[in-house]
Length: 293
Image (tube, rainbow, N blue to C red):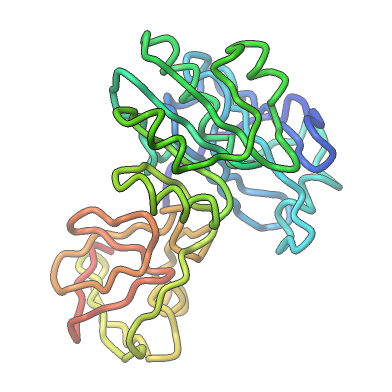
């Protein structure tokens, strides 16, 4: 099981009508270090685990800050946080993971939509501190932290809907980062070939028919049959080889496993590193996989 950190919910702040900011203070001393773009898994008292981008100051390890939008179609995570979670509650969080790292550059263009601002907030802080040229274009009906960001960064922040064609002409040499609704991310990718993106929902793609395969657990022993109508993650859990998971959609990375032999069929939106896969959505191209489990 992954290492967990114990935190105390220090306070909850309503930053917009539909977004709350949570400050999670380390209960046993400093929390694990992190870099801009990182996120954590938050274990909720209603037995759900959800992932949230860290939007505080990476230099302050006494606490983590996250922000949560109340989703009307919530599967129970955001609704619980908005309606029931109170300060003083003990909550376990994972070590930070980062699939959206900020790379060194002389100029940055950040584009965010709504709650997609959360991973961008610490990126802005780091980019400005580095001395780089920085511009944020921030759109959305709800803009959490907009007042805070304009106060800190002035005219570097544009509260406007992005015109990507115009931005491409204005910032031809910038390193571009985008996080927001799928339509915004798709538009950014169509104009900026090298854009760095993070999605909160999986990309709609078509794959071949699911087929059965077998998995060998290298460390614990045993072979597990994965039928065509069951995910690899569910097959592992049902066979007594539980793998932690959060999104179950291939966007958070919490269920990452190591592949020893065989060829995975990657269906995630993260871009699994060589020798890794995400069993919540990914399957096998070969008839057999050997996993480090």
